[in-house]
Amino acid sequence: MDINSELILRLEKLANLQLSAPERERLSGDLGKIVDMVNQLQEVNTDGVEPLVYLSDRGAVLREDIAHHQLPVAAALANAPQQDGTYFLVPKVSKK
Image (tube, rainbow, N blue to C red):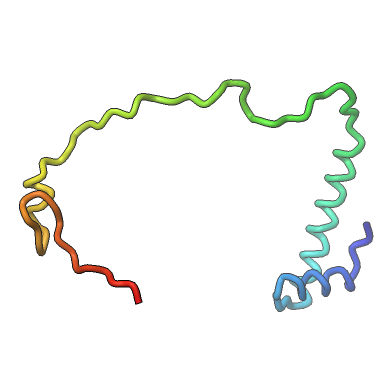
């Protein structure tokens, strides 16, 4: 892949960027390094290597959902502007 000024200007337009000349030069160099790295990876022999689907062969490690350190209702409602002793009271939301 050829990294030239046309490609940089096209990428700049697609990304809705306004780059200065030094920024375009730096981007060109960075893209060149990325393409070189990808080309290097393509040279690696991957025959017989299974594609990686998950990072770990372990299944989902779950824990029991047990509530701890619950706040008492009275303490939770203590600073509420409006409450009825059990619930917070809020203004009704109407559909328009």
